[in-house]
Length: 485
Ligand code: 5AD
Ligand code: SF4
Image 1 (spheres, rainbow, N blue to C red):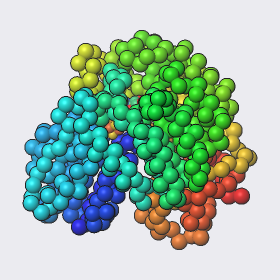
Image 2: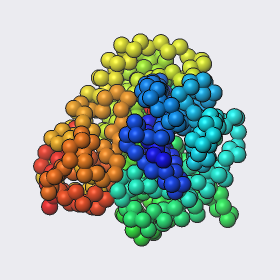
Image 3: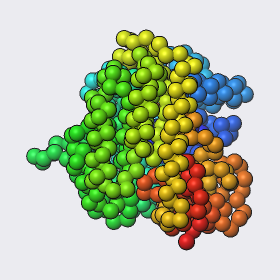
Image 4: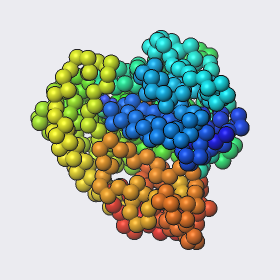
């Protein structure tokens, strides 16, 4: 039986897809990249913005079309949209399975039942803000089915916590991923060791507020810094990253100290500010001010020289005036991010902002502010990237670059609205994403530095998953181009 799997959304979702893939493979299913040739199509979904949901719905429309000529094909919707919309999704006869993020350990069983008994099922968490009953099953699933070869060679994600308790007023995550739960340090370390044994060199520790990681056991409290020290001891692991950080005092200095002390911990911090206006930050229920945020950045730069900082911003939050937006532009100018992801506010049903505030900034204004902020950041990224010209960098190679000659994300401008610069490639493939078979001895490869700069250069395909030294010869705002040394 062949399964087609598609993922929308964040790294948490990519990790869930990897776990699901691994579980299905162990149960005897094989993967296919063609929906038409698939017996089962599973879509792992995202609800963070309306746009993400619209993309999923249009994909489902496409599957509906395919299903007309293949009525036995099983279609499953998993992840955040499944949890958010539940039974509503099952009203669509195209869909056979609706499975929330906490129920993915049941996926093999659900798919098998759908294939054999034509059973359509809905499994989601009924009371999403209550202490998760599924925790034990998730923990087991997580530790049995880790890394899968669908991921980038030599790299893996390790979840350190699930859910979120922060309730930023715009955010759907607490309502689809449930309350915050930190995983036991022993389970995380075990998993990282197993991954190292499989050849993983870079582990990325994942959490919605990864710096809030906290676990009490044996009379002491473990924080993210403790995890960094422990993972650093694992032989085979050479780089460690963690995302995403929330601007907060708790554990901050300890985490930065670990970064400064430990050569394996990449000097990279992704710490979204969301807005440069204190009024808007308050309305977003972000618990910091702009000056506090800048102070945190200063401290990071003082404790970890050379640290690369990435941010997220949202434009057009309810009540955002031109003056507020001007403050955001100011913050981006002061922060000097390596890159930042910029999104137009999208009202999410059930969130506090949606219930209490009017989505009063027009689409046109959101678009204009988005373009303006992208341009401000692009100039900064361009300046920072140019500093690399003539320098040698160490790169972990991901695989073939997406397109020859342009940056690996295939984007001419700075990340367009709503798009993240996700790793450009999945596993090493001889075929590039554009469908060309690479016959060249030294095709164009892509990798990243420890600080997450994207590097494009020519080299042997077999380097995917390995480190390379590259001398940078030219740059674009998003990408460093160079030659292997
Ligand atoms: N509208 C627009 N962007 C959002 N984000 C989260 N919720 C929303 C929303 N309702 C953005 C934030 C967050 C990133 C993952 O997505 O910037 O950091
Ligand atoms: Fe990830 Fe949030 Fe999207 Fe869920 S809603 S996939 S947690 S970004």
